[in-house]
Image (cartoon, rainbow over all chains, first blue to last red; front, side, top):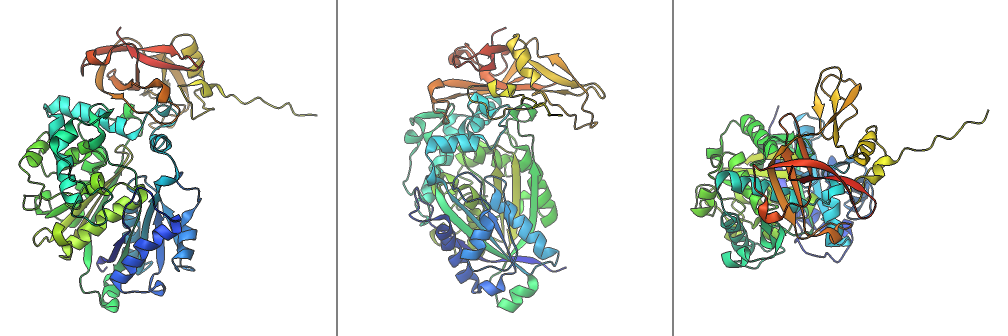
Length: 384
Length: 144
């Protein structure tokens, strides 16, 4: 069976409040991806639409999007794994193409979070965990990740400053990304003196809600030839895993088991190890999440993640540049669009089209995208 | 013959500051809480223990369960103090959520009256039934 490629990518600007409807928001990323691949709606065999419910009011958004984007009457369906929905979209599109069922599948991720208040949004996200046994205690995403942070800092003797350095890096690159929602440079004292959200995480340890859309187009090797795609980026590995939803079911609080499992699967499929990754996008919904990702992906040994950030090894020019587009921390985190945005960044890197954020001559890139509090883990490996 | 309408068992509506589930096959959990007991379930067929309690065993597929008390002390694995809360909980801020390890099982919940500054990973706490001001009921972690 032939290889599978990503032949076009697009992303809207990520903003606090998009002045339009969800279908108009989706169109922005769609138009960019279609223009990038230089194909037309009739070339797309099927579509996968990805978001997380209860922000906007549209039920079953796939049909609505397919119609607005001109993709009917091709089959379309909805994929949801909270914050990793569009990485799940990649895995599904890859499977559809690899199986020979379709030759060209479009994946669209979107989220318009500004339709509800921040406190409502925290409640929605909290309900992405265990609504029967945890939500009645008043849970929210920052607090769940804060429990991982507490366990991590305590176990390894790492500090809040180690975490803050991750935000300083994110802010440094966010300032270079024209699509980022937060372009301000943030220094270490600002991070460390910010208001607490859920101890030990403070305001700058947390990403912010955003409105945004992302889109990428997955195609067979044959279509890459048919469409005359100059710089296809090949899907080398896709790994995914799930974990018990309730914290009481977890046996690891210093890392995310789903990320370990998903990366092992993806590395095996791609036939590579962590040392061969030249550039990575990791799910830094909180600073602690990026710290754990360094270790769960094998870029650092357990407890050694802070050495990477302290030595600036995850900056451009370091041994493994991570989130050099600003990450979720600087871009903002429009749930269903985030994975597609990470994938876009890696595709642009592998095509040498990342502008000021370009890493020198990368051959292999990795996307780590987590849904919920380590509930869903997705790791994808892409190559030139 | 007119059918008698069975009243829905909505006991679980009483769990926590704001409940998001009304009916479950483990509604007796609420009655135990009322009596001051926190209980999990144990599979009568294979012996697997569950907290939070479940009606069904995924290991042997039996639904024959018995209740066991969450008693003694658990070790504090991790915790966080919330300074900001989701809608419905803002009146409770600040409050602390935590995970206790009892060996065979773990318990997620809120910390009761132990001051935040005194909390340390590894310390021993007990799980206790707790009545809330709004008439609801939950459980909290306190010094044994």
